[in-house]
Amino acid sequence: MLPAKRQSLTTKLAWMLTGFAFVVVMLSSWILDSIDHYHFTQYIDQNRDMRNQRIANVLAQAYERDHGWESDTGLDVARLSSLEGVNIQLCDITHRKVWSDHSASPGNASDTLPIRSGGTTVGYVEIFYVHPDSFSQFDDLFQQAMNQGVFTTILPVLVIALGLSWFLSRRISRPLVEMNQLARQMRQGNWGLRIQEPNGGVELSQLAESLNHLSEELQKQDMLRRNLTSDVAHELRTPLTTLKGHLEALIDGIWTPSKQRFETLHAEVERLIGLVSSLSKLNEAESDSLDLNRQQVDLARLTRLTVELVQPSYRQKGVQLDCHADSMIPLCTDPDKWKQILLNLLDNALKYTPETGRVTVTVALRDETALVQVADTGVGIAEEHLPYLFERFYRADRSRNRSTGGAGIGLAIVKKYVQALGGSLHVESNPGDGTLFEIHLPLRGGPRRDTGKTNFGD
Image (cartoon, rainbow, N blue to C red; front, side):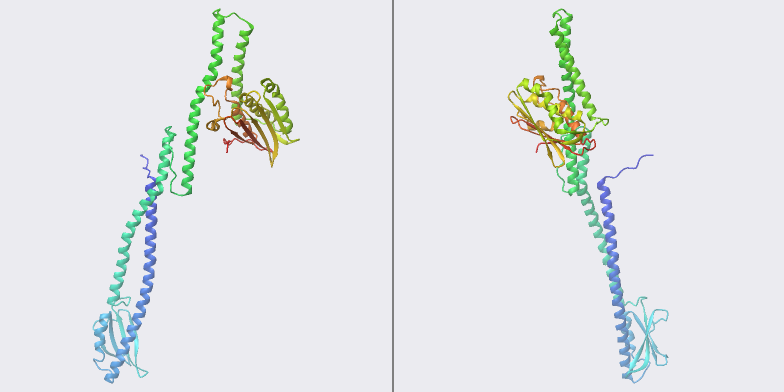
C-alpha cells in the first residue's frame, strides 16, 4: 500500500483559510438573511393590517353611500385588492354572504374584520390570502429579489476569499519554506547560507535567527572538526618524528649512545605522556561521569597556595606574579579541580607574558559570587580568535610552534571545569594590551552544569 501523498504547508493553509472564509461567509449570509427575514416579516404584518383596515374602511364608506348592502356594494374593492394578493368575501351583520370574489377560497389563510358605520358593526369582510404568508404580488417579488441578491453576492465573495486565502497562505508559509530549504542545505553540509529576517511576526523572526545561529555554530564546528584532525596529527607527528630520527641514528651508529641523547628521547616521551594525560582530563571534564569532590574551603587561601606553587617558574622567566585576595571567602567547591583551573590559567599567562611582564591574580566577593581574575600584560589575543579560544587543540598560532604555546587543551579543560563547578568564564583581550580571564563562582556551590555557552568579551 502506497503512503498517502503529503500536502505542502501552503496548500494546507490555503484550504484551512478557504474553509474558514467559507464558514464566515455562510454564517454572515445566514445572519443577514435572518435579520432581513425578521424585518421583512414585521413589514408584511404591518402592511397586512393597514391594508385590511383600509378595505374595511372603504366597504364602510360604500355601505353608507348605498344606505345598506346591495349585491354590488363595494365590489370594485375586490378587483383592486386582487392586485395586492387578497380575495374578499362580504357578509352582512348576520354573516350572510352579500357577495364573494370568485377566487376566494376558504382553504387559504384568512382574516375577518368587522365593518363599522356610525360606531355600529354593520357587516364583516373576510379577506383570503393568495400567498400562504399573506404576501402581496409585489412583496413576493421583493423577497425573491432579496434572496437572489444574497446568493448572488455569496459567489464573488467566496471567489475573492479563495484568492486571498491562497495569497495569504503563500505569504505566511514563504519564510517557513525558506527555512526548510536552509535546513535541507545544512543537512547537505552547506553551512554558509543565511535567512533574511522575514516579515511574518516576532516568532518567525526568532526562528530565523535561531536557524542562522545554528548554521553559524555548525559552520564553526565543522571548521574546528576539520582543524582538529590536522592539529592532533601535528601534535603527535613532532615527538614521534623526533623519536624515530634519534632511534634510527642510534641504530645506524651515526650517534653514539649518551646521557644527553637519552634525555632528549625521554623528554619527547614525556611530551607524549603529557598530551595523552591532557586528553584524558579533557575527556573526563566533557563526560557526564565527572566526579566532583566538593568541600567547604577558603577560596582566597586555596588560591594563594596555588599561586605559590608556580612562583619559581615565574621568577625563572623574570615575570612578576602578584596575588590579591580577600581575607576569607568560604566556598563549597572541588579544591583539586579549582587548583587545576588556576594552574592552567597561570601556565597560559606565563607562556604569553614576556620577561619583566606582570601577572595579577585577584580574588574578591561580588554580591553572591566569588570573583577570580587572572590578568597579564602579555601579547594579547586578536578578536577573531576569541570565539575559538576554549576549543580543543585551538591555537592562534597556526604553525603550532611549541616555543609559543602548548597543545591547545589547557583552556578547554578550564572551561569545562568552571562549568562543572557551576561558574561562568569571561575573557577580554586586545593585541599588545594583555589578557584578562574572569571567573564567577556561586558561593552556594551549585550542581554540575554544562551549558556549552561562554561569554567572550563585551
